[in-house]
Image (cartoon, rainbow, N blue to C red):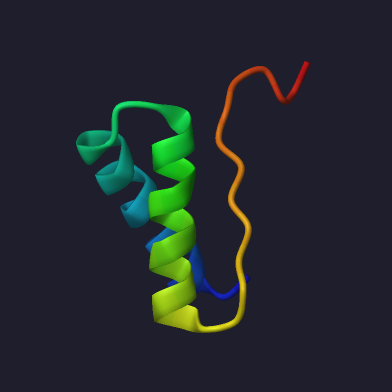
Length: 52
């Protein structure tokens, strides 16, 4: 992923957690932001304990 996309993901995630109340809303916010900014269809999964 290019640096610009990585930075957008970080910035978008920070903003999403500030304005959203649950992980489903955070994922939807980030997905919609990427869809608008970078075209195509993106998927976003937000949760805990994925590295266990």
